[in-house]
Length: 356
Ligand code: TRP
Image (cartoon, rainbow, N blue to C red; front, side, top):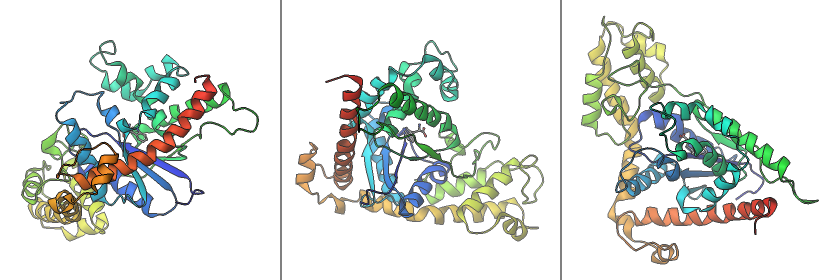
């Protein structure tokens, strides 16, 4: 790997199925950034973050592996990028603790995401939810990342990361000759379409409203049915007017995001054709767009891939199981690589703050 290229890092929480909004907003973008060849990329499964919300312990390992599988199926290539699992790298939690010491309570209290997620009462919200942005800062700072592709909702967390980096560097300067401990990261914001829920186009597409989501793993039949049922508006003209026709406008946006056709051309094509036909055609567009992802995921899951490099698994302390063993080997390798980088940074941090 070219050590001169800037480092880029991002993660997604494993908490249920990914939907089209996640794909267009994160995964697709990760793959493009990787393939640009301009960065040394790290992509991880933010499982520690995902524990801050209600979950079923039995489901978590499956969710972690499924997200990693989705990374690969979308085109993240372990030969080009480091793919790892957050909880497999102890340094994330350790650095979080150290950063906690320089994080003012007030900064965390004004985080929009915390305020939203603790709506039912900040007093009963778990401390992990409160500390979420500090863990995120640790994720980023451990790897010396210069760039962090995130959605708009994470910009405030990134700003905090920058503040903490600056504060740490000032408060715990290196000995003469040593460089700064942390790099101040920048966000890489991409313009992503804001997809709305199919069953209520005034709400964002979100896994908390499954009926309104197009999931990346949905079967063609499910996609056809969800789109046939999608809420549309009064009238029957296929036209883009988000304020007065939010339903059909959302479907037009989905079409635009997945096809190479400009929105106005689609509108022109469906002049005099009505909603039903557009919805039927859109279903086929979605099915076609997801097909390569779904096919790749299936292949990666197939038992044919279970012919495992047993030593690699044993080395990583994993049992040799047939299911997903190739995937586990990829993660074991990624974890090992990430751990070496993170441990090195943590050792530097510990020395600077006065720990053995
Ligand atoms: N909080 C991010 C989200 O929900 C996920 C995340 C955790 C992340 N750690 C990160 C993203 C570090 C970028 C870098 O989208």
